[in-house]
Length: 260
Image (cartoon, rainbow, N blue to C red; front, side):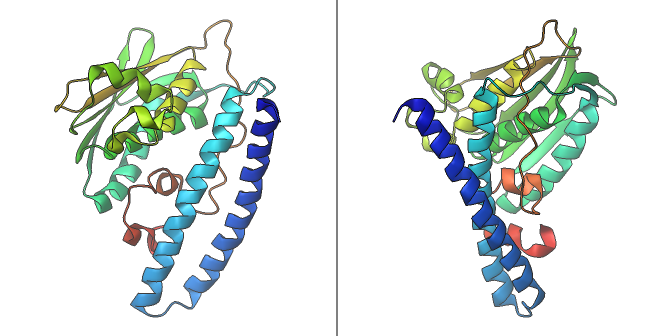
């Protein structure tokens, strides 16, 4: 079987997994109604945690396929207040990261509008924050205007990585980065999302002093724009998108139904 056939088979498998996960989610929600004791709620939290982690994996497979596909239709670009997006997304992710002992600080201007694909931008920011939170206990998300571009910067206070390995962060080659950076495919997706907006993602680090990643996108649509539609945003099975995005680092107690 050639590469194209393998890719199609993987995508079909992801779709089948999503169907099974939807059934598991429905069962979990039904069980929640009759979970009257603390032990039952704890078991349900572990189940929800596993479901969210699998949804994250499936969603990444589907998103990577759509981002790299040649036949996806162009989206309808719209004006997005990136400042509002950063503050609201940061607040929700910060509340969840507190379960993992990670502090997220967000700084953004009062108003910053760009013509962009909101779903892709949100995914880009979530991937960068999630990656940073795996490395350090303090993460900073900032948004500034630099000329005709919007620049999202995510910094952590983790151990950093050797400068010669920085580029591997963007290729999804897990064996090329330390354990706390595993799952580098997320940063690769973030760079692809920025590239499709005629933007870029760059990283800078000093070993022992954390990592800083900056994603830059133009405020207005470039001409011509080569932006591919990733399709509908992830079907999260009723779970909050931030919960799914951070599911591989949050403790089980963050997945109790009252917080979903």
